[in-house]
Image 1 (cartoon, rainbow, N blue to C red):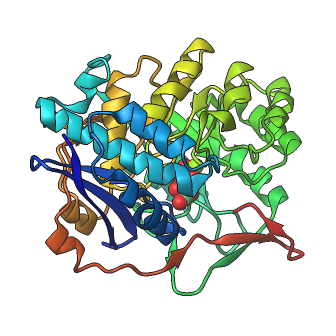
Image 2 (tube, rainbow, N blue to C red):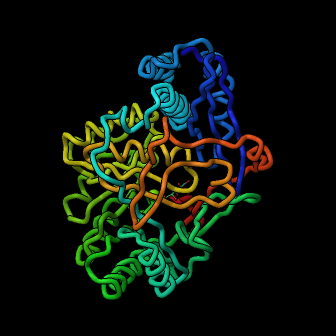
Amino acid sequence: MKIANARVIVCSPGRNFVTLKLETADGLYGLGDATLNGRELAVASYLTEHVVPLLIGRDARRIEDIWQFFYKGAYWRRGPVTMSAIAAVDTALWDLKGKALNVPVYQLLGGASREAVRVYGHASGESIEDTLAAVGRYRDRGYTAIRAQCAVPGMAKTYGIGRTDAYEPAERGALVESVWDTSRYLAIVPVLFERLRREFGPDVQLLHDVHHRLTPIEAARLGHALEPYHLFWMEDPTPAENQESFRLIRQHTSTPLAVGEVFNSIHDCRLLIQEQLIDYIRTTVVHAGGISHLRKIASLAELHSVRTGSHGATDLSPVCMAAALHFDLSVHNFGIQEYMPHSTDTDRVFPHAYTFAEGMMHPGDAPGLGVDIDESLAVTFPYERAYLPVARLTDGTMHDW
Ligand code: CS2
Ligand code: MG
């Protein structure tokens, strides 16, 4: 099964996506997501200039060997651009193998370990009351796990607050700079979750994304303050380049911790997992080297009672969501999958077999990943530069957004 052609498709049905399409000499094709929000063209160029020329003629069945070739062969290791490019190749090869063998990819990963995949949705609001209403909408749609984010009084724009339930943080046009005030944030979050528990009771699983914005001791303080509300997880409490800093958080709180959506290899999270400094690892197919590498991270996590909780925001395309669901259905130490429904235009460009019902999803049983790309439609949505916002403290100092 020789790779005869490989093309990078950039489109923007409401937001930018980068898709790799591998075509074999015997007429099959496989898809891989290569979208890196705000740096899409960097990955598109890496693929076009440095990966595609080395792919043509290779045996598409040799998934692990091709992965190792592009990881070791680049000499320069890791990083979000390289690992997203490798991820796209890996994902497309798994798609091809499933199609060639006429089975859904999860059957190649060890088969189903569960009947369906539990997901969580994103509820947010400009006020605590708005956020309660949004959580109620998600509960009414059947979600049993819901992330809650509310605006912080006195701050014009903060991470995670969508104008509608469909939240897309990247903004076209001018870069958005927002102001951040940690003390105001620390004051409102416990109030939000006290209200949510009082309103919805103990059964709904509640999640919160700190989004890297606290210091370790501030994160320890917030985790401790949230303990009465039994969160499913508190996500990205502090920037995780310094994995050891999670020891301090762990000493002060039993609130479960989730980290990893910005990680791109097992080396970013090895200490966090081995020392059980986290409870869920958020690495995902598109940014952590594809299905092949994500399985290795999950295997390490399984040894240390850490479960998966893969990233699934709208800036990961339906190709990634499809691949994630095949992985989620099969992996033993599955925790939960993030799911933000894409726009109608995105779903038209990327028709897919996966389904949502009553808070659960399933990848479907189509051969391969069960996702496609309508290229004639994709071309009608040309790329538009868009950047993620940045945040500064009130004195102008750059901060984590
Ligand atoms: C967030 C994302 O989904 C999440 O947990 O952290 O919205 C993240 O901000 C975006 O994926 C960045 O592109
Ligand atoms: Mg997050």
